Length: 104
Image 1 (cartoon, one colour):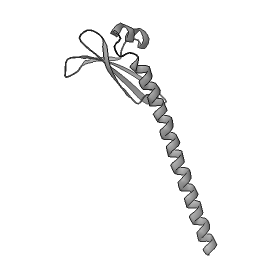
Image 2 (cartoon, helix red, strand yellow):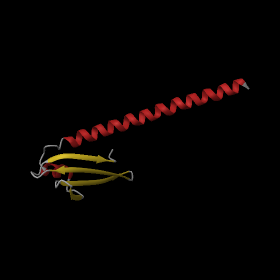
Image 3 (tube, helix red, strand yellow):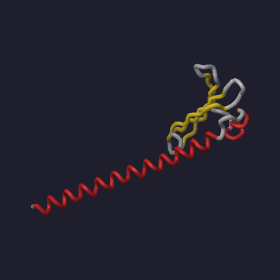
Image 4 (cartoon, one colour):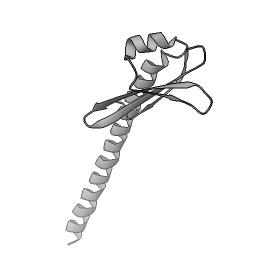
């Protein structure tokens, strides 16, 4: 009986180690994807809107922010997951910021 309890506890310990290491691997992979996405999109900062449109195409939506700047929104889907990229454009038609959500 003692040996069975020991085996059970060892099995739970091994499962716990496997579970935590798997979560860490997934987190590392997602962090790397986010880093690549930010690096790719940050190249547009300080560029004219025309450069953004040449590379990304026409936006799916356009909005005006609370501060009066233009927001260009690009929406794509991959594996049924929506990816939304928003670029903020100032009054001089230059890209001044971006937000990426759900993109990988």
